[in-house]
Amino acid sequence: GWTFQGDWDETTPIISNTCTLEWPPLSGKFITFPEIDRARFFSLRRAREKIKQTQQPFLDRLAAALKKRDAAGVRT
Image 1 (cartoon, helix red, strand yellow):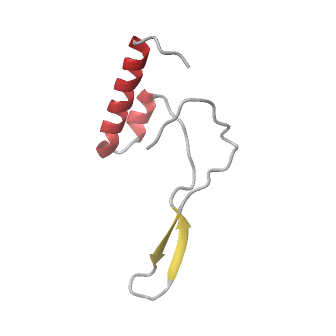
Image 2 (cartoon, rainbow, N blue to C red; image 1 turned 30 degrees about the vertical axis):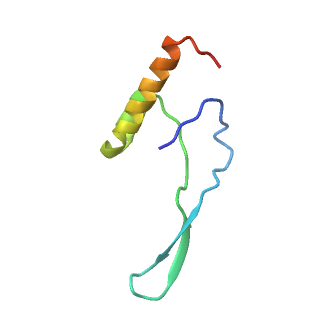
């Protein structure tokens, strides 16, 4: 998961790194594919429903950072 502040046009293509994998295993044949095929943005509540359980701490840190920013009155 990742986050940023600002606007994003969902029609803008995502440019991803690629991975190369031997497939089928031990075949000597390699395929290359993008690490990600799409990107979406969600509210924190909706993100918690979508994200893997092991990635929940990422959302916890984001929520804490946003709360701290808001408490400090920082506006961008």
